[in-house]
Image (cartoon, rainbow, N blue to C red; front, top):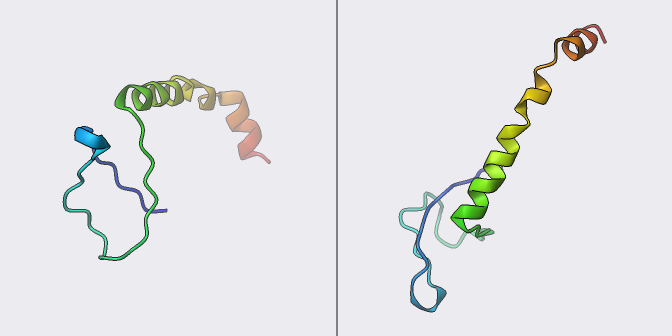
Length: 65
């Protein structure tokens, strides 16, 4: 899945402008809008649990499977 990330500010009447999207005219796309604060919290939550993957016992078991 190809994804692009843009930052924008909501203007009058809920208008959001995105400039220079590298996709062809007429292509249907899905837009997911996340307030910046919520996105930051999700990113921090995802990064906070990376230590789970640094497990030498599990690495040895997995490598020998």
